Image (tube, rainbow, N blue to C red; front, side, top):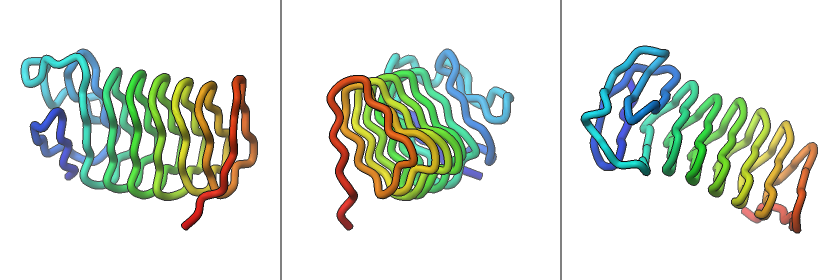
Length: 148
């Protein structure tokens, strides 16, 4: 079981893939929370524990554990451990305490994490990582090693 907190409201969910679609929470494709519980357009989501994947249309995502894949259309992404797959947000910063096994992408935001096994791309932000195999930047980019 994982604890999922959305805009301050706590839910106990089974392990697996979490998706927020039309303000409804789905786990592994099954609806667990309907849209009547929260009506806000911007969601602040925190997962206590590991999650296979999490997807949200807007708002911040925090995982206090490991994740496989994480995506948000608009919002910051914070992972307290590592990500084995990909991380993406259209508008927001990405901060991962551990390593990333896949790609990290944000259109307008900074990227800060450990080692990135795939590509790191930010159109208008900075990238700070221990090791990045490929770095793409369409607009001004600065690269700084993490100092621990």
